[in-house]
Length: 127
Ligand SMILES: [Zn+2]
Image 1 (cartoon, helix red, strand yellow):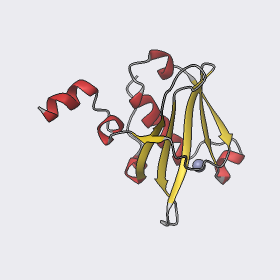
Image 2: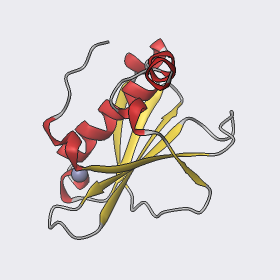
Image 3: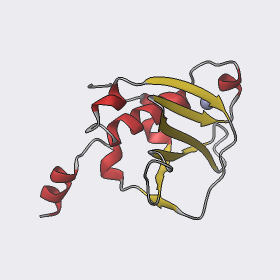
């Protein structure tokens, strides 16, 4: 699936994942976005679980079960990173209101993945 780049992609500060992803530890990313007031970061989590992409964060729109720019940006990044897994492109998205806090075991994902550059291209660019 070729999705269009969200306008607010430039608000992404960093993308993290968990170490040791397996069945008990599903595919998850955490995205740090600029807060709307421009102070500090705002964390959003996306997890692929039971055939659904669950996007969790704490904002007024999500409490009303509405999509917001945070959701749009994080869904785009999630689908870009896991574009080699077709079940993710067709998965239903659900929203969850939950405050996400930074964890010590998160690993940062290189920026090239976020921009949709795959690993081979990345190697080519480094060579
Ligand atoms: Zn939001």
